Length: 190
Image (cartoon, rainbow, N blue to C red; front, top):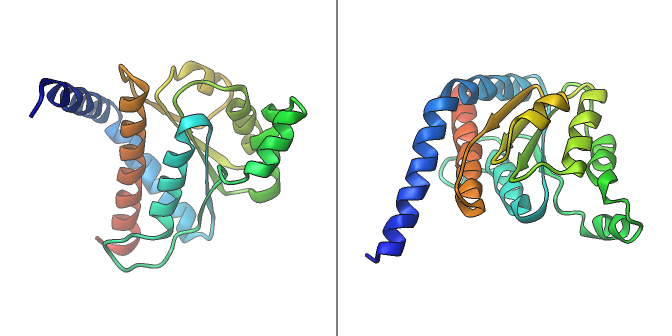
């Protein structure tokens, strides 16, 4: 194995080990909140921008369907798929409204919005504020500074530190999978 591959693996492992030790209790509490949300008929809506839209999709799909185990689908939706709407807002220099508009159209009081972020962005911060106005719980999984999310009023912020965006994206995807597996254990016993 090359030295570069070993270095990448060590970075990945270091990011996950350090952040999981720091955030294990928050992940478990968030998973319990999600399990209660699903049990009471609520929905999870996942938002991310830029390069993490695929991570948001993967997290939402993990809740919808587990490839390894048969279980009922859990109601989760990613907001990253509306490219025509995003392009139209970008052309109008109004992309900051993207998540707020999508949340207003899809979320209802009692749902949870999960924001997956590598950096603090105005559209996602506006989404946090809109989610709170809609009566939704908010969970931020971030590879960026936690303070702006807390200042925006996010209920829970789990921020990991990563030396590179790629390591942060890997860590955030892992957090999403951990949440899903903890929810499955709570709801279905596995």
